[in-house]
Picture 1 (cartoon, rainbow, N blue to C red):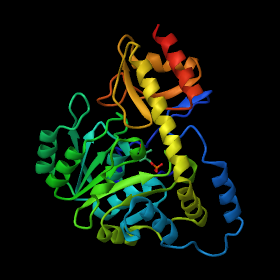
Picture 2 (tube, rainbow, N blue to C red; picture 1 turned 180 degrees about the horizontal axis):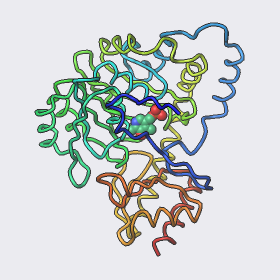
Picture 3 (cartoon, rainbow, N blue to C red; picture 1 turned 120 degrees about the horizontal axis):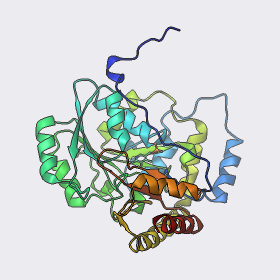
Amino acid sequence: MTVIPVRDDLKALEGYHSPQVDVRVRLNTNESPVPPPAAWRDAFASELSRVEWHRYPDRSATELRTGIAELHGVRADQVFAANGSNEVLQTLLLTYAGPGRTVATFEPTYQLHGHIARLTGATVAEGERAADFRLDLAEVDRVIESAQPIITFLCSPNNPTGLEESESDVRAVVAAAPGIVVVDEAYGQFASWSALGLIDDDLPLVVSRTFSKTWSMAGSRLGYLVGPAWLVAELDKVILPYHLDSAKQIAGRLALRYADEMEARVQMIVAERERIAATLATLPVDAFESGANFILFRPRTMPGRRVWDGLLQHSVLIRDCSGWDRLENCLRVTVGTSEENDAFLAALTEVLA
Ligand SMILES: *Cc1c(COP(=O)(O)O)cnc(C)c1O
């Protein structure tokens, strides 16, 4: 068998893995525990039946972009949509990163920021967070000063820690960074503030969001960023033509009509998150404060991996971060329905007993 070698710079890379196991309670990938409203499903099916499938979709997804722009009080030319926020980030990195350029991350954070940057051939400068996983502005200055990154990534709330970046920290990073600052707000709707309010054509700041989490539409693969119009225009040149198919454009456009239902789901999940946090506080674990739909915690009396295995015995699957760099012994649980959360808390209490 002849195996053709990949690019030299890709040889050392590992793929992105999120193990899937067949279980009763699945709390490992930060999806919404409930589907979108039935009215959305009906409206979607009805519009789908009228699609002219022999025609290419609207290449610039005008209606979808306009809808997203209205939602956030920005202009449509400040919105770029793609197949999940991962494709948004990939397009941004293809446009601005690449060989000879450096991208900065502050670890631990979302693994795909550094991973996609490396796929484009860029160098990744990994800054460290403080021991409590908060941003350390002296370290930010040091990394930015030495690496001069073309893109600096922040994630608020941060995955996998759940911690929000403060507005003053985001402003400080924007002021210090020589290039573009990306605030990944995949969990932005769960948080107490958003960097969307800072978006301005004169500021190299972008905020990325997704329909996968709060909008209950992970199956649809739709995400977007809001940023300066000049940057969006550059991304439009790099993205493949017609990358957003007709069905996805309809799905996203219709979802925006159900913003109130989305907000109600967010309220439910935030209330459940606080209930889980309150119970975790009574158990022998250290939990991190979360502004997202998941909670990172570290068992005090047992190795994280053993706790994860024990939960699996109870048919409860959460994310095992215990082997990840900087996250020794940590586990991450996604907030589910109240029944799922009860099952998780009961199983955890037994495993730790
Ligand atoms: C889930 C997640 C995304 C991914 O989003 P898609 O829109 O599903 O591609 C992006 N960023 C962070 C931090 C995430 O946790």
